[in-house]
Image 1: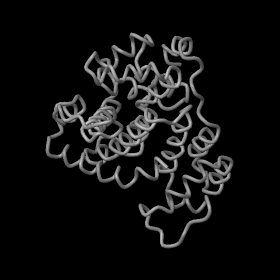
Image 2: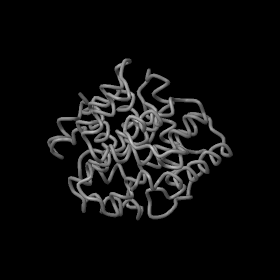
Image 3: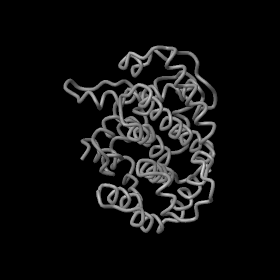
Length: 283
């Protein structure tokens, strides 16, 4: 268990559990003999997840000429990796206790970083694109947990950060005694997701890993860091764009030795993909 978990629970209360359908689907996907029929049966118990999977399988992204009307058919079209991402994405969505402007911006940021992480992983060949999607999706889950606990206070923290009154981490520590990175890591650890995803959530801001960290973990986190910088640059999950920095000067870009031109190309791809996919994720 993550070493600050008990402290976080003491301050914030029990961390949100992973929904039952997500637990069952992830368990089935680890079974090499799992079938689309078994997955459909598990997912059918959650109307929200079922509806989203059918809607996305029938979206123009997949170009199906005939309407898909069964979960089993939708699962075949989407594939296991996309199914895993969608189930986890719905799990994240279910954490919100309300859904105002703050929650919507956090949600857009999560989806934008998830899509961006997948693009960076594929373009720079540094991680499995679907694992990168999940890592990007959950890197800020701690912000949602903090907002659920004290929404007005967390909005004030974000406003103070926007006004240049301090780093987000320092402002979070002043009120909560720990940062969203730590809370995110504790949630993912509590959900029994992989240690790689836990470490990515913990270090996605600065890549300040201890010596001896697995290079694959560092590269995955670098991809997520780059995707997060794309969201800032494009204004995804924010009230306005932040163009005060250069895309090639972020910790992730320096780690992967990524050139400015290829980063701009990847950011443009994120802008296009997010514009196309956002309505399906944010509906």
